[in-house]
Image (cartoon, rainbow, N blue to C red):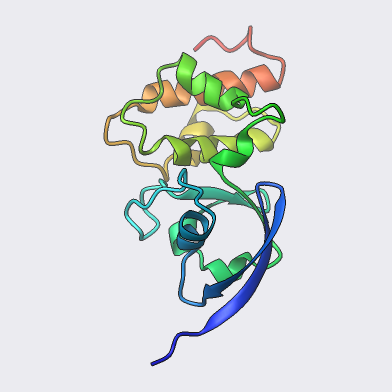
Length: 167
């Protein structure tokens, strides 16, 4: 049986790219293997742990169960794309540091991408809504409370409400 390939054109972290990909390859495979975006982790590879989360056209997806060919014409954002123009880290990344929301670090990129999708909504979510939107991510080190605080803190800061949000 011969492999089939297809040309995929998309935008990754603001850069227009084109790549011939195996039609069976996942977006995780393309991002890691072809573009060396190692923040996209290979975890469960069945869409349950969130380690591979990326934002596609503004919505968070598990890239392990998203075929690379589906990326045609899409805008994809990985953790590497959150860096500012000067190469500095984003506010959500800084909040993870400030709140000690990183332990082993394996799950961190996926959590930050889920958080970035929440923050892009530019609205205030309740604690329950934040927890529900972050529930697709698994942390084996049990850093959930620190992660929750980092997300809530950044959301309130972006909305100019950081003084109100006693965590």
